[in-house]
Structure formats: C-alpha cells, structure tokens
Length: 280
Image (cartoon, rainbow, N blue to C red; front, side):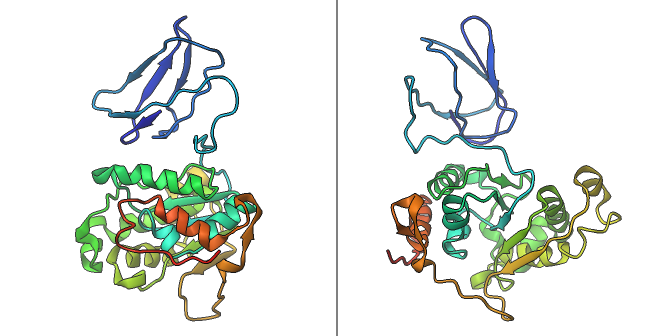
C-alpha cells in the first residue's frame, strides 16, 4: 500500500476480521493477509490520498517490496540529514555500509518533511530501502521544506531556533544513539536549513543528559549521553573515508560509493541538480 502522506487506514477481510491498521504512520506499508483472498476493504481517513497498490500471490516477494521495521528503540548509528537526498550527497557510503552490509541498527531522522512535494517522500523511502536501511525513517512533522529557508536567517524565522533545538534533544533522547552523523556546520554550500540543523544539534548534545532541559522528552525517553558525533567537514581530527574502496558483499560486491550513487539516483526529482561520483 502507498499513500501520499501519513494517514489513518484500516484493512478488513471479507469475514470482518481487521487485518491491519496503519498505527505506525508508514506511507509504504506491506501487509501479509495470511490467506488468499479475492477481495478486502480498506477504509481511509477523509482527505487521505491512496497512491498505489501492489498484490502478490503466495511465496517470496521481490526484493523491491518494502517491509519496513519500526524506528529503532536504540540506534547504533543516528544519521541526521536536513532533506531527502542529503544522506547520500554528504555522507557517502555510510548508509549502504553500516545498514546494508553490516546490518547495524541505523536510524535516519530528517529535520524537514516534503509534504508540499509528496513525491519526494516516496523517493526517500525508495532510496533508503535500496541501500539496505530497514528501520523506517523519522520525518519531523513540524518543519516543511521551503525554498525560502536557503538563507540562515530565513530558516530561523521559518522554523524557530528553539523549536529545532527541542526537536534535536528529543530525537537524541528517543534513540539513545551510540554514534551520530551530522551535516557540515557551514551548511555544506551555505544552505540555511543545513546550518540550523547542525548548530542546534551541537547545542542539543550538551543538553540531553540534563533532565531540566526540555523535561517532557526527558520524562518520556529518559536522559542520555552520546558517545561520538561525526560532523561532515569538521576541521579538527578529520577522518577521510574512501568509500569506493569498500566492496559490499550484500550488493554484488559493488562499492559503498556506488551504492550511495544508486541511492541518490532514487531521488529522481533531484538527480538533475547534483550527482554523486562513484567508482566500482
């Protein structure tokens, strides 16, 4: 099942059995009916947009069928892109290597949603699945991507520094990550929303173990301390990873960089703007 944006729905079998409801808010949802049926009923909330349905007979489903796991309870690696596609443009082969090859619990959390261009929500899921991410990504419901956030001052005005900081603290507490991967503090190419994302994260890292800071999320998830945070292009103690040298057995021995390129290519609406150079 595919929906335009998260919505409530319920699937009912002919005998009246409610097989599944979309409690997770996934827009790509795999449903195992448990039996062969010739009909079923799907009730959706008013205003919901149903965009796709694929049906399969008994047996193994194709690899492209997305059977998402819920977001992590505890993340080995928490990746914090600002928009869909940033995870491939700036983090190289990290996702295909750590999630797809090594099978770590990798959680991706985006600062912005694309509900105003919902096709990008589908592109993001297709891209993550292609490179081996299996835990459903988290998208901030509050912050919709707008062109007007390209300047830092506009991003702060649109989203609110304090609002983003609170979101960062809650995210860190929710997933208790061992390692965090963040974007360039200068916004990669100066993008204001990127800058805001990383600046608030760096402050949030100092607040997560203080129960007096944003007490609601402290009560809900507990406090935590992050062991390591790697910031793209950070000037001190730089680590250069040659992702083209990492050959991945889970992807027919393609390189991690090649898989990053393929992941980015799933963001079809953005591929005309940037390209991820790959080798292998």
